[in-house]
Length: 271
Image (cartoon, rainbow, N blue to C red; front, side):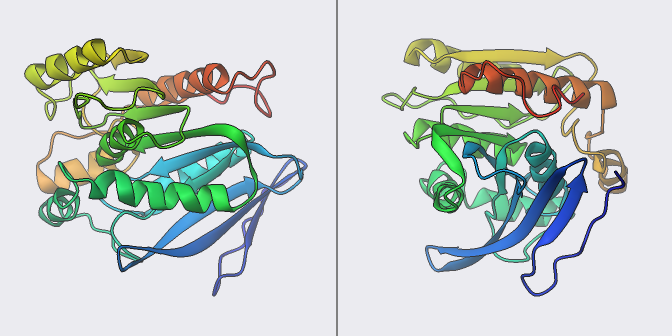
């Protein structure tokens, strides 16, 4: 069946037909700490059954098309996905200096986990998510945010960090969530010392953590726009298709374990 995408206009739902599935997407307005936010919800409307939910946390560029597309991909796999807004409705950038300013307000502060938790609450409020079956994925800054969310004791069964910044677990942090770190082996943004400190905190805290590195992959290896942005701003970031595909499959395998699903997702693994 041919895929058809209808644009979202003034809050109207968009429908993406995939085979017999109908992927519904819509903007969802909410608020946290006085900041008006707007996330992006995606799910398959061809079933009324409750399904696992996945929170999607953007890179430090903000809620642009990349995390929204990831939410749609997750919906095609049978999950209810919600790409959250960390900065404020419509706030995105491709300027590294501005992105650093936006992301910098969260690092080392409770606001990082609290803002993500506000998005998680929106996902749970849809009534579409199965009890106890929620995970979070994040990219770069979003990967670090997922770590902070897990440490806070939020009700997530697992988190996946794609080329994320690393936040060592503080003493006494919740270790209920399983953690999957998908790292670019050639990532120059993350130092050997940071990796060692993170891994030691995982060991000391008794975390269930998997670490997977992809040879030749630099920072932002999952984002198709990374190569262009890197060249424009002199940053060592680039898309790496083999690593992007392999890490997406690894995420799906992780979800099967985390959600204790005996059946494969709709359509099997997407590579």
